[in-house]
Figure 1: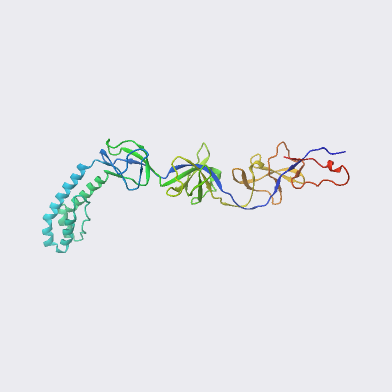
Figure 2: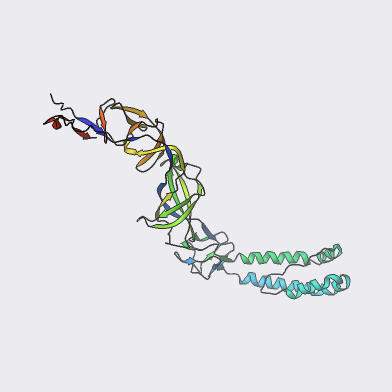
Length: 361
């Protein structure tokens, strides 16, 4: 009597372990490697610099972004220098008589003092008597007092610390600010970072110093990058860690802060492992194997999850593991293996129709 029982044929792979290199791909947001506030260190009216103090304006490192009105400070320094020159001029004759070996140095120091330039270096004072003589005439204290005023004057000029753009402006040219006021927010544009959230269990495969590829959303290679740091905490909502990839923005396709990029991290070597489709897994870490024509459940050790596959070990080499999803099947169900079907019988007319019906799961 013909056997009309349907027999399921399944796709399997023979367990064989090798060393696997598996890359990881995730999307991240471009952020600036430096974001600083331009803060006024002196009080006064804001004057224009070499770059416009406007949101979106670009600037280069070392450019004068703005200055604080400083005429009064400059005049005060000039007056103090003038008084200092007068003091030195009255002391030079005494130095020439009492310390002739030091006279030339102090004369050159006197001649090199200019009203619109910083004070030159004070000559070395090794002689104890000379030191007492100069200190008693306030030459040393006044020298450092003028230097202190020059430092204060420098605080009236605000220079760009890097190449970048102005992201926010709180005070425009012409406004009056107090010391400590935040004038503008600056972001660096020549060196950017891509902040990539990666699941905590996947982040262990990423190492600081790894070289990565940064892709645009249409999968064109944008730029190379390098992993510079990993956060030491996990975001509670996503259970992910932030991986920061440094990208040089001076070459290739320009990146912009705020846009999203796809980052491909290099795979670390996973020794003695095997890769199968994720869809073949059920109950988190179980698979079906085929043993003597029947399905048997086995627990595997999952080493790494990928987008469509996973890498595992835990089965014996040579076992047949089912490499496709099975629906409505139970353990010990009789199955055949695709590619190992029995050939059609050729014993007599009409016998070919009596072979088992095949169905893929």
